[in-house]
Amino acid sequence: MTLRILYLIDSLGVGGAECSLLEITRRFRQTSVAVCHLYPEDSLRPDFEAAGIPVYPLDMKGRYPGPQAWRKLQAVQQAVQPDLLHITGLFAGLLGRSMGKVQGVRMVDSFTNETYTPAHYASLPPRSRLKLRALYVLDRLTLRWVDRIIANSEAVRLCNAATLHVPLQRVEVIYRGRDPAPFLSPQSDRMEELRCRFELAGGGPVIVNVARLIPRKGQAELIQAMPAVLHRFPTARLLLAGEGHHRPQLQALIEHLGLAQQVTLLGTVRDVPELLALADVFAFPSHFEGLGGAVVEAMMAACPIVAADTPVHREMVISGESGLLVTPQHPGALAEGILWMLDHPAEAEAMGRKARQVALEKFHIDGVAARYEALYRSLAKAN
Image 1: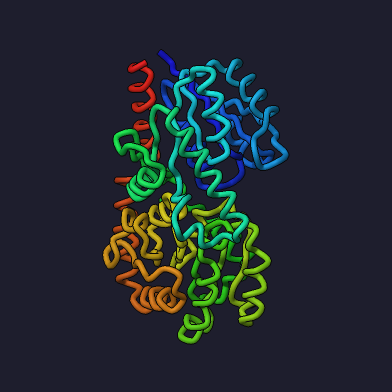
Image 2 (image 1 turned 90 degrees about the horizontal axis):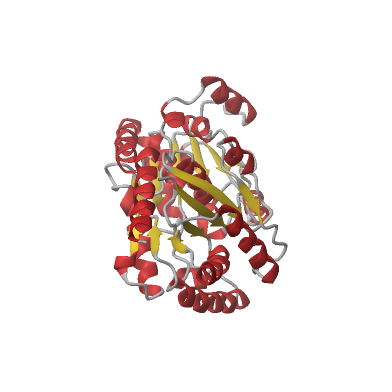
């Protein structure tokens, strides 16, 4: 029997959750999939449709779901007639759970981040904190309606289950994966194109970060670490791939530190495997994560990793064996980690190889997709 799954997600922009959803769903063998997204951003829509996956936009203009969005989602549900509704995203959750409850649809939800931690609250302005507390109440009340929750790491499972008072037995960990093929065999012509585009012909060490440009991703600390790196390696370059609302502040910091020639904001980069193949170090100082998909990609690329020492990163990287974990939000510690990798290229290369081995075992997309399908079938069978 072919299962019908309707996915509800905040957007189809280029992000970790969205890319993971695409990679997972196009590998299903006995599951029919449709995707519905709340907000207009739909950069990945052509990729889903090329994989034969129907896409239903709700075209919400405001941030918060209202009656019109509810009616549109109800129409999508009636058209698709799903066996299960799988929800990803805070606002998708608030909308989807209410519709699923009324329509009697079995639901799977997602824990993808540590949304309600003190660190997150502290990073927000006072008004945003009040809004997040209100959303927390709604989140906690409506989560009781879902049948199962998938967390993308054990750290996220434990944190959110405790914070939202969800029994641990209702939450299952399935890591988000990646297709290793592009990272095992990057295309040399694209590498050369990137080398020319970003003026890397000088031969100095290249440090890469791939993440949205938002404060919690830690790019500011990475930029602040660069003067110490440049003191030892004057021709080093830092390439920051990604877009986000923090871009103006980061650009101002680059100019304030006089690093305009050494640090480049690349914007969105599609050729991530080739970019990682050019890197001597992958730096990921994120303050907190669900599961850093960019770290998984760096592991598959066998790129030496320096990341913030957080619970999630400890599930991915063994410091001193498959990378280095350094004190979070500490530019000096970050610089020391990067410099160690550059000073010890043989050891760094060995760590990269070990990281690739771990990634192929834990994060191979085929195994991840199989686990998702198995969970869906077990829930459908229980019904």
